[in-house]
Image (cartoon, rainbow, N blue to C red; front, side, top):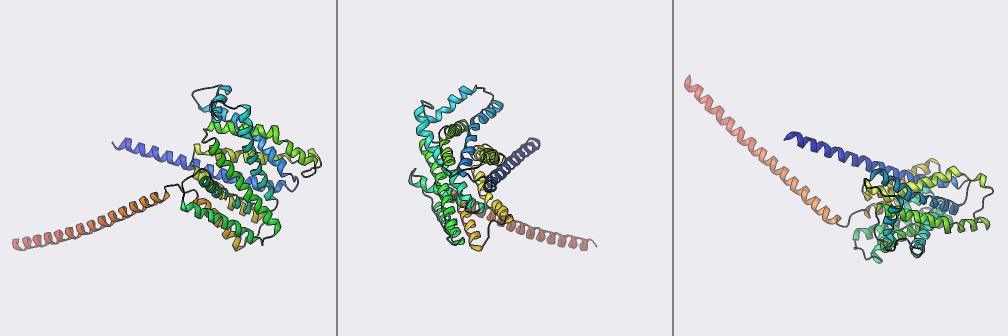
Length: 383
């Protein structure tokens, strides 16, 4: 009996260890990809000051999502389908008619605009404020998602999430105060807040119009976004180039290695955020976003790009705390009550066991003393 039970426990511990290792790997990957994107973008701006061109170039890499998904599907799935069959199956995300021309423009254009604005405003803000402030302020998008979901989607009201939203707003004000309300930093902070708002609007709009998506459907949706970006958004960086707003001297001087690095990091970050739940929980993935803040802080402190005064540190901590509060599940209060009650029951059982052990010890001691007196009396009588 003990053999199978021990094997089952060992197998369970191995599975938990694998889950922990996968979760840790995903968290570190999310953290490093998001922090790396911010730091590499700031380095790129020194020689190539064209944030919209960088945004457009990185968004074109979304075309790789569905091909990468199909490669993973063909390698892991027992039921094989050709790419066209898999494409038609994933088109169910858009309804019974699939991906039509009308759906392409009505359901893709708004999301592509929001996607582009989110990344462009964030990159534009990195030109004016540090990566630490930008990554911390971008964490406020979680609070904006809650507020929009509560107002638009009529999601369940949670007092702790209102507190988290207040923390986010307080952190924004404190970071602005830490820089002395200079116009340069205020513009940068406003750009990051606008970027976080676009990200929140993107998520809420996706949930409202398309609902939830399977892995293949999400990959196809992101690929269609990349196709729309290549086909129609290209006119924007072209216009910015010829008007001189984002002008560079020669195409040969474009730092392609840095642009490809930003695109790869953003692609990796998007893959982890959308498909990382296959190996770990969404909460851990979100924790990786928060951990990018101290990583950026270390990098900024090393490059002397930021002055860490007390107000800035408190503001960043408040925003991160608000972000973590938003990760609590809806039934967190009931779970906390059950946990406290279990702790009290276990504590009471321990006290009872200690008391029972003490009573047993006194009883054994009294029996031993009685036995010793009896044996002594017997020996005395024998002599």
